[in-house]
Image (cartoon, rainbow, N blue to C red; front, top):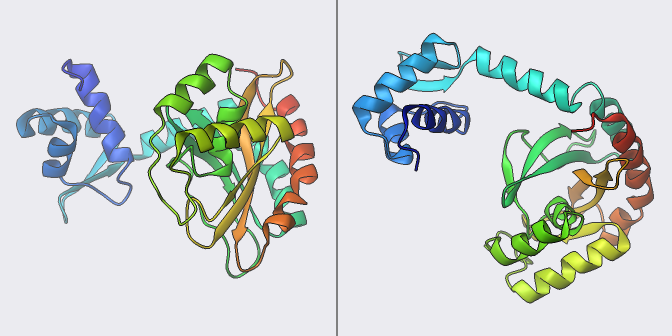
Length: 250
């Protein structure tokens, strides 16, 4: 837990960002471990910079427009919006299902882009949210194509929390699943993260072969069999190859 002023302020800012519908000062203090008086002073400083907004009516702090602006600028720098969006929209037009993109963030993956499918019932996602690695197709792909030392560390450390009826909860089974993903070039998740949800994902590789992100198609299980989704892998791989060249090298 950060004890310096800057570290505490950053922790509070992150917590506000994780509560887009608002969070009270008492919750901020409790979740950050920062005393209420200190949390009040620091979060008010964030308000003055426009990073956080305070709604007097319900006494809640929410992400400010300045934070949104910075997020948009970061997204542009990584190419998530201007470069990735047209390609992902094209994939969705062809699959009629949601297309998602994620990057590795510690022992989780971070949703960075999402295109909704056109059908009435589909998969929903929220960019800026984290997901588990062990029970999502994108998480498995990101581990499978990570550098050897990173992959080994993740396979040792990721929490094997059961999220869906088919979540992998055995570490050796996870190692085998990730090895299969590396061998065949894609990963699947069959009702592992959520009941009634299936997904397939491929890696987006930079020209040097290192993994940049994961690209996924996700659909309700009642509409798409696992074979249906695997049949979409060539389409996803073509889009991933295009993105690997067009996205900024970082």
